[in-house]
Each structure stands twice: as C-alpha cells, then as structure tokens.
Length: 200
Image 1 (cartoon, rainbow, N blue to C red):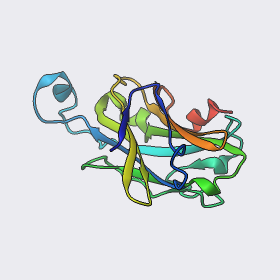
Image 2: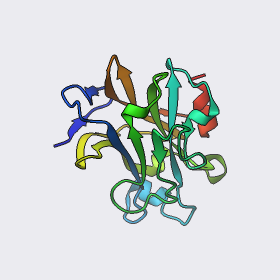
Image 3: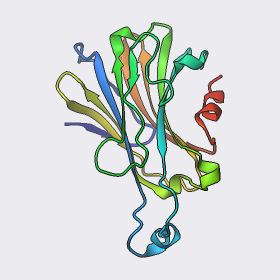
Image 4: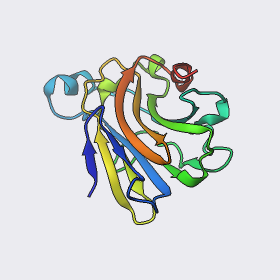
C-alpha cells in the first residue's frame, strides 16, 4: 500500500528495501472541468487551447545543474548513461492515471548525481495565457518496477493560480540510500530553461 505524503514530508525509498533498484515515477494532472457551474467552470468554460503540461527531470550534482544533457524531457528523453528515461510527451492531460512517466535505474545513476528534481511546466503558457489554476488533481507517485507496487504518492493540493511551473518532488541520495521529498512549490518560470537557472 502506497504511503501518501503531504507537502514537505520525506520518505526513505531504499532503506529496508535493498532490492529496490528500478523505479517508475508517474506524474499526472487534469484540466479543470469545463462543464458545470462555479467560478472556475465559468471562467474556463469557453473554448481555448488544450493545456499541454510537460514533465522534466533535472539531474543535479551537489544540488547544482551543471550540464544541459542533465535535463531529461520531451526533447531529450534519455540520460547519456540510460539511467533515467522519459517515456514521452502527453499533449492534453486528458484521461485517468499517469500522464507522463519516467523510468529510473538507481544503481546506474552516476555517483556524481545526488538529486533528481521533477518539474512540470505549461508549454507556451505566456501566449496561451495558461497557468496551474487551470489544472487540478496533480500528483507524483513512485512505483517499484519489479512488482508494480506503488511506494509513495503525493497529491498536490495547494492553490497554484498564476503559477506556470511546479517543482513537484525530489529523489535524492542520503548516504547509500535514496529518499523522496514532496516539494510542491509553484513558480512563475515560463519554461524549463528558466527553472534550470534556479539550480545553476
């Protein structure tokens, strides 16, 4: 049974689970329902573009982003060593379950990499006038690939109106172990390039 985390909480992934080496990280979100009344329904009820959210993983060395190849996203689906693989872009966020997934082979993550930061941002958010107030049910979950067991889930519940990027969560080294942290911070960065600057 998955452990449900609140913002700011952390959990050990590998302590007491020595065989855990391959993870699936699922990220999901839904556009705010367009039907039905209410303020949001009225505000976003008209046509408008689909909201294209993109997930990315930043591979940090000593908490710093040092090389553009360490950004794994729809334009660079695989780390150079193959330890982190993004399965591709979902353009709308429609439907249940994960919208985008990242596969991680912990034992092959280079020793120099101490942290993986999971980010979701809205593609072309400025010209489309879109923000995370138009998104609901956002989550990140970590699954043991060997048995499909969901280890941890973090549902993002804050009001992210006006925010255009979300720093969702982190998987990081703690000595010989790996931990997960539920971050859930919204930012006004309009692209992954701007998010990256926070870690340089």
